[in-house]
Image 1 (cartoon, rainbow, N blue to C red):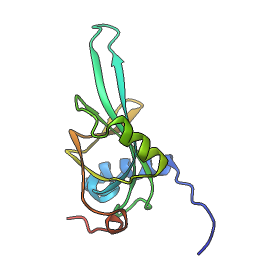
Image 2 (image 1 turned 135 degrees about the vertical axis):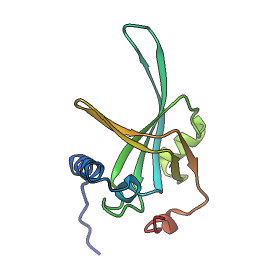
Image 3 (image 1 turned 45 degrees about the vertical axis):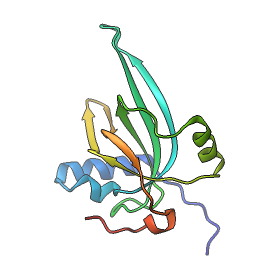
Length: 140
């Protein structure tokens, strides 16, 4: 086995997701359905015109069973008005590698407005699938 490290290019990931959207390929075929949770944090933005606050749960994940992206491609997914699944202690354990979580998302969507784009979901759930078993799981 080679000791060479692989660098995943977010631009390549973005191009694949965009091309899939244009070709009407299912998003789950592009990004997969199971992900390794890397981090979770809150993001608050304020609309300057209305002073309305929007709270988002932001998660960084790595692909595990994509049909097009390499295993381990990093993605960021945002969810509005949901509470974080992990406690502060769990987030620290995740950061230190003491725990690993395989997660999935409900209603995941790709969006693009002008020069902005991203992935959103309505919620995230932790699976009982091990990291090793999640890699390569067939997408239905």
